[in-house]
Length: 184
Ligand SMILES: C[S@@+](CC[C@H](N)C(=O)[O-])C[C@H]1O[C@@H](n2cnc3c(N)ncnc32)[C@H](O)[C@@H]1O
Image (tube, rainbow, N blue to C red; front, top):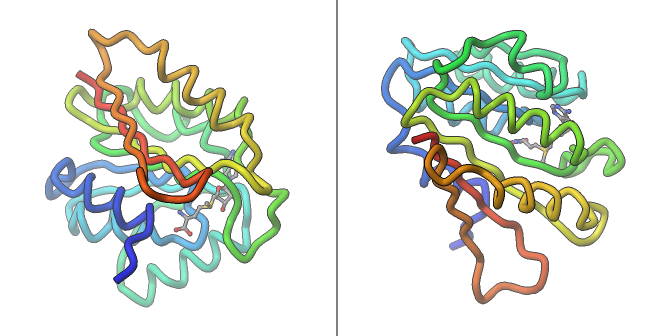
């Protein structure tokens, strides 16, 4: 049995996604999380996705079509998500940071735009909504993005947000970090 960080985060989020929910996949890649969100939000739901790689979005689109699922996919950086969604309306926003496995490791999320996107995402979330982050470090991911994101999250007002950071406790160094931010 193998449990990946992405499947772990998906399981954690399941109870936050009602039928008909508005959800965002901030890093679509090949669409694994987009498919999950479409299935969880159901036919009445709306899923909006962002990625800067056209090839990745094509793959995601094909996978969605095979499953007869619909999502609104944008070839755009997640730092622009506020151009597509309204404040206080979104139930769940997923970020799976880093580079696309099997793709070019240099095309990866970057701390400056990731921080902008998280700030915007928190405005778009409705109260009671949740934003998840899978944060990678070490290897080609380095440490800058992880450190800056964690520093930013530490400064969030605890009257407005609950931040939970989980840990793969017995795993090797630089295990991925699942983080959840609940808008109170
Ligand atoms: C770890 S992968 C996502 C994997 C995806 N969730 C899946 O299931 O295949 C990270 C993705 O973030 C994308 N990315 C990098 N910078 C971005 C940005 N500013 N806005 C949106 N996506 C970005 C990359 O192109 C890459 O596809």
